[in-house]
Image 1 (spheres, rainbow, N blue to C red):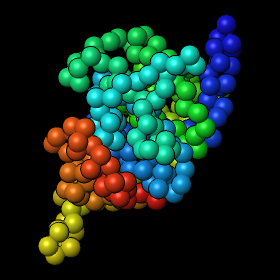
Image 2 (image 1 turned 120 degrees about the vertical axis):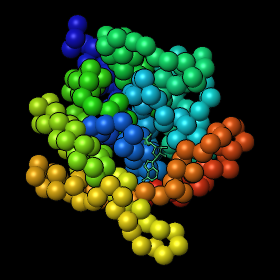
Image 3 (image 1 turned 30 degrees about the vertical axis):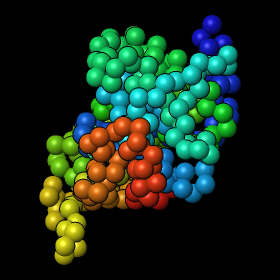
Image 4 (image 1 turned 180 degrees about the horizontal axis):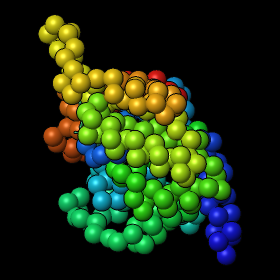
Length: 265
Ligand code: ADP
């Protein structure tokens, strides 16, 4: 029975070339922003990209991609993801599309969350994708164990681990890297986000939370260090505008595409 279920999942994802998970030890370090920037960087490089948001209790991908409030369509083949661009090369799926109201709380225990993740993997018709980026909740919880287990038959490429330079965040990243080792999920690399603030007036960089911890951690675990992203108020304004109505969505889409500071993997 389990093997049939795994075969179904593998069949569903056989049109997806690469699967990348984005992990972080803590919330608020910019994991979802990095997921979105990674997706935009790959999109800008000409790829077809999907983003799956499995941060069920704090879904923010629709908002960051400017498509919150949209509805997911049910077709005979399964759920049709929400497309972000007219060319239909960038799409996403999130529990936020299934909630009656964006402020509704998801108060679920592990088994129900696992079932939702399984359904996302089984039922979303991604079509041909070069990359599927999976934005996970912070930490190493039920959702992480489940998604890694469910994806065994498709062998994900690995994980991008996001941290900030503070010791308190780095301590949790250590756990995240140990988790990857334990479940044999390759680590594609570590990104140090909010690494310094570049003054818009003098271009001098202030290391608000210290700097370089992510790189040292990557060295210690012998995994690649992908780079540092400074605190950039323009990034927050563009990816996470105060208002996110249908009219602002279209006007900020081009700006969103221009924000990505990450080079494609
Ligand atoms: P997480 O997914 O880790 O909880 P988010 O990606 O939702 O974190 O980011 C939290 C907040 O920080 C958002 O408002 C986001 O716009 C902002 N943010 C993330 N990275 C940066 C950055 N490099 N510069 C400025 N703001 C950032």
